[in-house]
Amino acid sequence: MTTAPDEFRQRARRAYEWGRLWRAALKSWPALLLTALSCWLCHETGLSVAIGAVLFALATGLLWYGRIGTQAASAGLKAGLGAFAVPVATFHSYFAPDCCTLTAMLIVNGACGLGVGILLSFESTRLQTERNVFLMFASVVAALCGMLGCILFGPMGLTGMAAGVLLSTAPVAIYRRAIA
Amino acid sequence: MDEATRNLLNRSMAALADGDRSAFDPAYRTLWPLLVRLVTVISSDPVIAEDIAQQAMLKILAKISTFDRSKDALAWSMTIAVNEYRSYRRKLGNRGAHQGEWMVAEPTDVDTPEAIAIRNNLRDAVRAVMGQLQPHDLEVVVAALYDSQRPPFAAATFRKRLQRALAHTRLIWKRYYDDDRTG
Image (tube, rainbow over the protein chains, first blue to last red):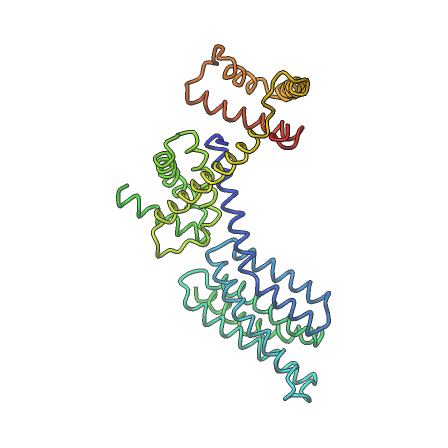
């Protein structure tokens, strides 16, 4: 049925936003995959679902917003896959049965977070504008992915990952801001 | 369509695909008349064309995140519009086929008590549905049914309003009687 031009323009705008949101939700599938893996591996369903839900909502929101948000979410999810895989592979590996000490856990999680942060800082230098916005959102997405893999180690594991990412990205952002 | 407009459309669609909302108006303004013109040409019915163009426009905008910037925005949009027109034709064909089956099942003898009862029931049902219509819809339907004096609209406006009124009638009918082919 035909509608008035203004009314149709609004419908078209709504169709655009809903279309974007739907595609964004589809593109955020790694968040769901990591949450499912985290539930399976870490046996902390409540915490995994809570972190996974935040990660999914954040990634969907960024991808829906577009522009720098899309770039940040994509880079964050890619780096986050690594941040998830490294601690999980290390602590679930049959080759490392004696590594589950507090020190080893902090070193692995922290180093993984640092590595991801450095990677994203390097990635942000390729951008012309809004580098710090990119770095901030990509880091949060990657840190949440990594945290899904660290749930097994409790609050210390989560803190190690978050601290690693923060320590490697915050100085870059602060330095950029200072010289701008 | 000149090269400058085509480039503008390409730029606007690419920006819209990236999430730049400020490109919505230029893309909409450029694309809408083109869609209506294309569908009018292929359907040769301006009223239907506008409906299909609207559906196509909604589909294009919903799918724009998947638009490949290396491709031509006009060709991409027109492909969706043509597909939308094909879907419409297919639906129309299916509806025609179903209606044909229903027509065969109609009683042919109009003087039997059963046929009279059906006719009376139908008349009552139609009256009940017509009673639910908005006054402006009713005015247009009555004018079209009885060839009485038409409201003071242009022919195209009258056609559009009639189409809208019939759609409303169909909705009310479905609300009361579920499917309009089961009577």
